[in-house]
Length: 381
Image (cartoon, rainbow, N blue to C red):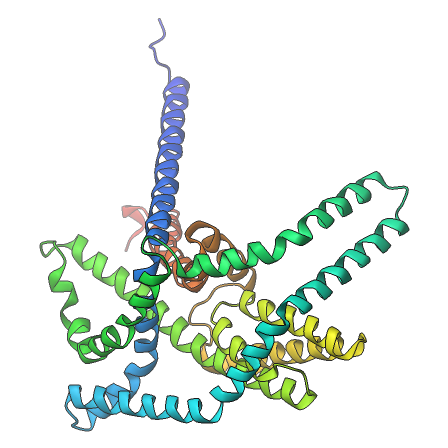
């Protein structure tokens, strides 16, 4: 009489239980990510200033370390770096900010004109497309949908911008949180070395193999964060200078302002540059009333991106983050949807790099090790 369950039935039951466990673990993981994203979005007015100060600390910490290595006290080194940064900001304020302020006021005054002209241009292009494909009902339906969406684009864009600075505490809380930037930056720089040496002592864990592995994993993630933020900040500054100078030489209105926007928004790979390219093309089309100058603007952005990809980024960032460009684009869009606003876009690459570290350490390398066939004892000399 056969024994039940049979070998095949046991394998089937085990496979079903394993699949169910994987599905449950996956569902719990996705839910935890969503809850974490909602929490980050809720605390965005507080976390965004702290994130900004942390990013700046990553950039300025090498200067503090060099001064400390020459015998300067850590607090004094931070004070010297702060003084240098403030002096540089004052020079920028007196030399560039007045022009940027004037261009900002002019842009705010002409913004309705630019928005209306761009909407009319898009609508006329859609009508021409409809006339060309008059016999295609799918094209007609898609074009009609686009025409309905055109008036909704400016409010949606404004909602995205305001959503980046609003949250549980609103815009006032965001402005209040900005006051935390210099304070938290000072403590990050002053106590950075101490924190780096002893942060693991404050983990609520006893000395064990698990704690050692956790510390090693967090240190590897931190290396990714340092590499990305320090490199991307310098890359975005170079992009802003290149594009801003080229647009000024071209004679485009608001070229200096667009260069500043690139220097700030290029912190978000690809998306930031695209967000600056769109208004630049619209301004060129309205200012010159032809198609040549929008093409020139597009070429300026393309050449700047090629210079960044071929020369600037490899020298500054290198392959330290190690993410494929398509992965970067998808991660920026995905985390922006999950967290929302500017914070999600800024943290997209570091969060994706963190996931990569976790998958590499605990999934890919573990799977590779499990597939290694150990030699039999009798074959070992």
